[in-house]
Length: 491
Image (cartoon, rainbow, N blue to C red; front, side, top):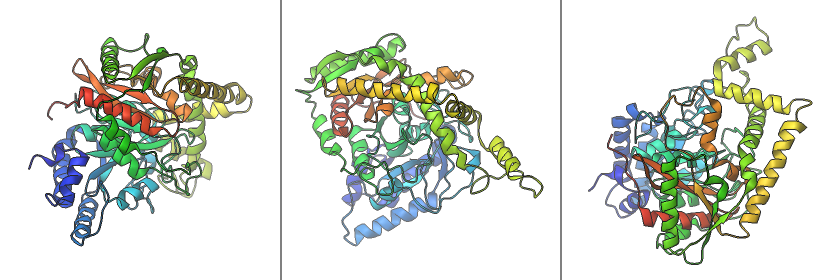
């Protein structure tokens, strides 16, 4: 049998279903791989060895008893540490929640368990999902398996790196401004942001509630679609959950894999193909556009002028919502508590706890958001940013009247060296330049590997209308069929 860790989720599921490998064997192979390489990659914050093996044994027993199981039964999955996992540490990459073990599962985690997947553990991330490089984790950075001196993207760099390092065949991320797609692009993996409300936020530690979207990460488009199908759908516990079934993303991925895009109109966002992207990124992107055209797609250029204002609008809206959401971390109800010696007031304990527990980027965004929401500034900053958000939505709507989907590079650059941007927040924020508009609109987007630049992966982004997630999977799978997948150097 070839190395189980090098197989796709689809291949692993078929082996387990056919009795050629047990879930325990598959799980142990991935735990062994984590033990062998994660000291260099640092994709995981917590590996749940006992829980994973127990879940795998239970699954093997259910299969032996003749129980019918789902299409991903027995497949290991890594979960970004932003989702609550019952009895398993959930830190959100922050010292303020160090050691916290939730008493409940997030809806997505619950659905993963019900589907028979095996949770390996929790992956590293920028603290409270605030960052583009996973260098803002309170527990140390994650390294890119393609080049350990470079970043794996953020905030979900741990999930993407786990895939690229063959520590897990599937992973869960969350995307607020590009935190699934940008790590996917720079690690040569697939990352999909579903339609906002298409996946449940119940049990997701909130950063920016109108933007946060959990989603699937994988090494192939079909695997991502299968995972999307498992975790998606209406959740009555989430007031923003869309009461509609998930589009048939699996069928769309399989259709796209045939390599036929006849009749599909794709729009190149003109604002994203000018200055601002590295030459190597643009070369790989243009070659991919040619490949899509050869598959039968009609390529047109579409202008979305308000996309240029997405970055400043995002960095008013997201910090404002973070300022509100993170007020719950007060040193009283759960998590870290500093200075509670019986002599200090509640305000002093709260201040000491937040000073110790929050990192510099989180503090920066809390202050920015609190200022934007303050009396006399709300209308000038937050209110104006929401108006820009409306204009961006109008641009998307107008564009989708002309084309079926939009395409662009996922990121302006390949993975940059560690430490290159930590001293310049604005340069760090620019890593999400091409992904942010989709979050402000609420539609789905996916990054799929499309080539290499200087030996490092480049991603192509496909954006679709809200609740048309199937369209992006079809286009992404078609491109994958044309350009193939990309394998990092051996660790």
